[in-house]
Amino acid sequence: MSTVLVTDSIYGKFIGYEKVSKLQDTARILLGVMLAFAGVSHLTFARRDFQAQVPDWVPLDKDLTVVLSGGVEISLGLALVLLRRYRKYTGLVAALFFFAVFPGNISQYTHHRDAFGLDTDTRRLVRLFFQPVLILWALYASGILDRKSLKGF
Image (cartoon, rainbow, N blue to C red; front, side, top):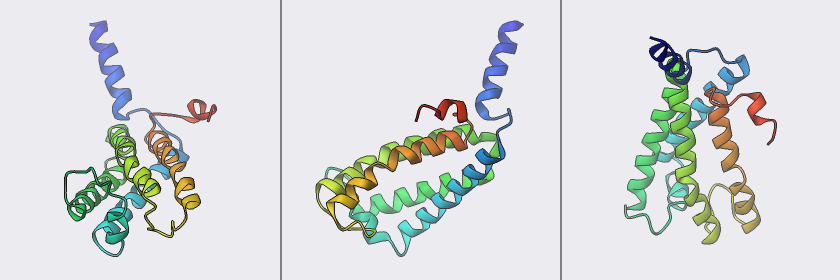
């Protein structure tokens, strides 16, 4: 009986039953809106800029890669905003997504590709340091990390 209660308690904590701060809720919604907007921009006005970030070693067509990643970003953004009960799952998936697309940012830097106003190596290098911030944002906003966890950063 106690094993079931412990398992239920751990499961309940992971999927987001415990409370989070208003700051975390606001951060989650803001991140969701930003992701959905970025996803729409993948499919419309920023499509070519996003193609510049696709590494040459990706086995898919650059445009297809951009369209697929745009769809993922729209889905993640909507999930972060609308599926509050599953915020930890969506936050973890968002953090993993930010980690997965990081090679695109590195490729943009190493191949000196201009996009999004990143037209110098210095600007492209500075951009690389923001990817860990996005990962931490997703983990914090979803309640996986809290302020105590982030004190060392």
